[in-house]
Image (cartoon, rainbow, N blue to C red):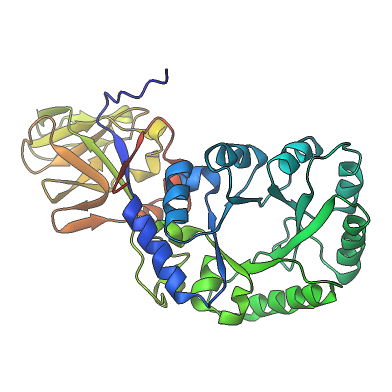
Length: 374
């Protein structure tokens, strides 16, 4: 039996009603008939794939998107009847599982199709979504010639079906639309070159769905970062057509309190030295939990007050400077709301000189995800 008891007070709290609200709001905003593809790759951006997928489906999402075949297997085990799309490359060895379990695969290579044709005795059709590289530079066909060669190779195989065609925009979250517009033109050109339009044409990532021309919603939109209540960029945040709320909080408790005298130091390298008598609290969270050392100096909330992390963050612990001697067991909020204050994922991202996408993803599996409003 799996061990579920949680002894350490450090935990991530995911508000599933917030997830549902973020989907509901998008559903109301989209044009009629446009499907929502909930992107739950990378353990739902660190939020917990099964719980988030369930909440998103309850709120109106119709398809789940993952990055890898292994993620697709996990989703299919929990959701036997939902459409699942693998956005990344899949090996030939996954073809049989994909057909048996009706998982949609991304395809961008005629050679891959030729190799996949060698898989004998498929029980059901293989559903393929052609990826167009309109300017992202990762995977995908880049011209009409490549597209039609691939399309004809798929059509020549009785059990293979072109179920969709899609692309991904590199600069949809930026104000300058020059590059974005070029990608749109190329994608539309390639879609129009297909002899038969497939069931699903999809190009809109979160930013495109929220702030670009509604015509780009096509048949479906891929709802990623804002499913979790985070804006793709500051530019998009200023233009949001509806409110989104952060679903991820991070909490722990004070496990030790000590009074430091002026001149005494804290942590590896003794990088923090008290200039006056003060109180130091120790928290059971460190860089092995994803609270990387670059977060030194970041504030946390204790008793509704901001307290800075002092000294170097350790693998399993860190220390905070407190205005008074709080009790052992006092709740500490590292991300989320406490009292009248709120520490956002964007705040951490700015501190770490990165993007908000990365923050929940790097909170490691050692930190249990717990769910409210299930």
